[in-house]
Image 1 (tube, rainbow, N blue to C red):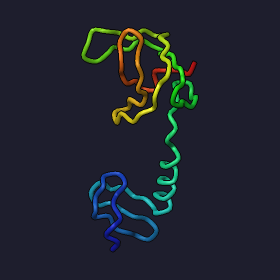
Image 2 (spheres, rainbow, N blue to C red):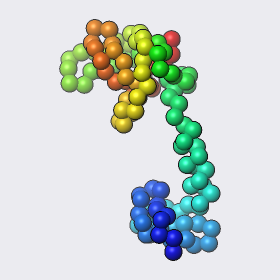
Image 3 (tube, helix red, strand yellow):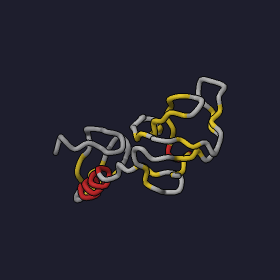
Length: 118
């Protein structure tokens, strides 16, 4: 048994090989080593962040907010149509992948699904 193989779904160390497939006894997930290697190759190249229309965003771009967004922890609202200049791409961990300074509000993080490239 290959002890360094873990289930990609639940992380269990008790995965075992049955023919060409690996099987996790804890969650029931089945996968092949080729599938796992292909997913790992695809995950390395998928670092690009796209806006709501599918355009690739880069540091320094100008974006427009496409809908009204409530600012968590305050009574402020970012109105749809607000332009944000000089964005920075960041990994917020919770889906907030754009760091920026909003006019009249200050520094905040946005999700790329709520902006479009200008």
